[in-house]
Image (cartoon, rainbow, N blue to C red; front, top):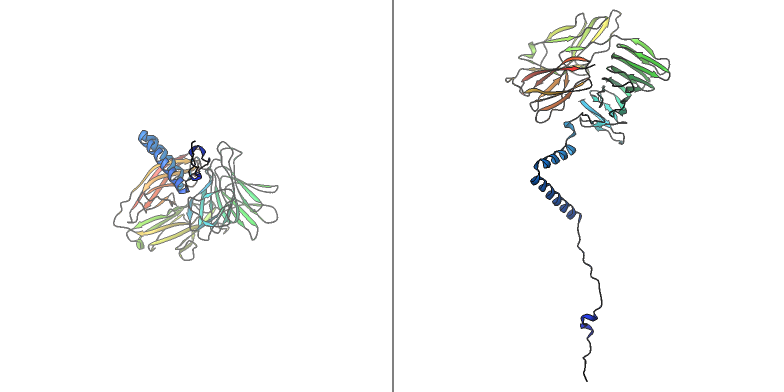
Length: 431
């Protein structure tokens, strides 16, 4: 007889073990996931670099262009919105989906519904993708009301003036269906191709004025329609019919160019030449020169000038502003011309300055000037300052809309040493 020892439950044979499931886990953080993802991308890019270096370079350039600085190409064929191309003083913008005002920069995009506001000593110039531009004058509030500039479709750009004044300039609108307009209260001004129009609106009187300086426009309020030719004005009162009249055109200023540096060995004894274009029907002119943009401190105020130029000396070195007003035989005066600024500076020891024009491109009637100068230099192009000079001295500037025909674009520069340079390039604008 065989005796079997008792089975110890603590040492159960393998064929009698109770089945069980064991679960193992490892905690993985988001940082770990990101780290492994970056390592995987590094391996992929490293493989691309070793296998096809040219493909690697193309990929990197594409990424850099996508996330890079948009200011490097402020206006291009893909532009859908309006952009600032010139800012003077403090200009603010309130985006359509925001309740906060922010300071405008050249990289601030403008979309439908955005508000733009200027102060008493500031203005701004904005250009749409189709080449239409508008200048927001001081103490003005406007709204971007339309901005439809898709390719192969009629363009429709429009701004609304809440208060103040704007100038709108158009190029060739391309098709009869394309529109460029300015609205003030309940009156809308349709600006035709190759035209320049100024619109003012007084919200207290609820009265607006439209003046055409070149080209043509049509003012509409309800069923009223008034066509305007150059130097014609439409006055739209709060009640009553629209009134049409002719105006005496303000003179166009020629010299000194706006924002031009005038270099003189002795500024006090130097002679500064002022010149403007003659105005039809004008019998005399008034020239004013001031050290402030608001003309609160006038250093020269001469009326009844019968010619269109005058030479003045005795000015100290510094910044100056000047304008001209025309008067006809009936003693009726034009509005004040544009205000030009110039700087009278003492000649420096070194007159060498780097300035070159490397390329040009035409956007409708707006010319883009591309070039290079010294870092920190001041430039003006046809009387307009160049605000966006890159740290390496490269610059891109967009002119005001140009009339069809041949034009000479003049670039004047001054460096920090007092050196100056002047370059010019010819541009042909087709009809």
